[in-house]
Image 1 (tube, rainbow, N blue to C red):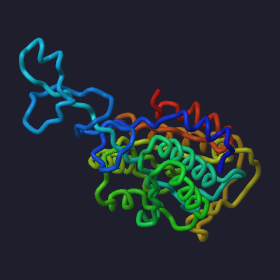
Image 2 (cartoon, rainbow, N blue to C red):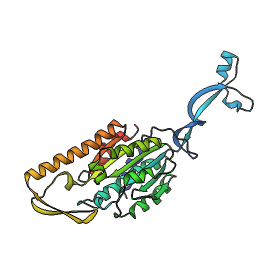
Image 3 (cartoon, rainbow, N blue to C red):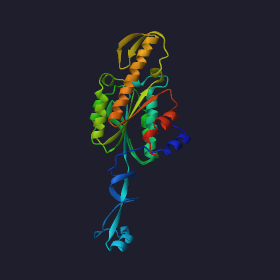
Image 4 (tube, rainbow, N blue to C red):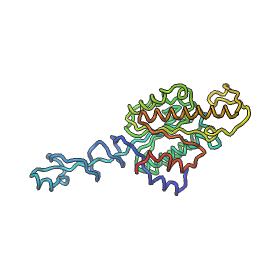
Length: 292
């Protein structure tokens, strides 16, 4: 999906995952379990059967008692990505769905290069998902799965998230335009999603994707607007200065409301414009989701 130089830049990044992993597979994240990595955790008294190579002989010389050094075990962390393939995402000179897939691919590559486990879900049906681990080999299959996805069925984000089964503690990223009645008309909808994922011990990142044409209206005259989710629904609109200003005020209030709810509940929120350069979005606008 990207060229070699771009993959090299992505490989230098690491997603910030606050939750400690209790997964079974080895990786590069600190686990709640004790293990044999290079990072020291604590001391405990020696017990028969312990590896004598772990004895701290300096502590024995000072205290005349045997102590064992314990180290943090390194496990892979869990990264979940939820992608909205609703028809509303199939809009724009550069389609919102295209940016969605590119961002999911970039963040998946970053996670997999750090030996994290990645699961990508279709928000229309979370049973349509692809799980990957194992670095570049896992990324090749995941990238191919992403490239096969098409816009169609409407996504019920709340229902889909709340239907999830067991999840490992980790990072969850939702990619959507959030342009559905449930989010526009009810302020508590986003809170339900964030609270449920927090219940599942997830650090939550929301990536709202809007088309450049939605961010800046360049039309004038009278048009019929067709609901992309319900083509029988039409609205006659005259694009004059007043109506454009009203639209922009409403859009700012909507995105500002999402940002406010996310901040209040401890989730990250990013508004991405398809008209922006992709590298600016990845390396600058999403900067706070990486570890440095």
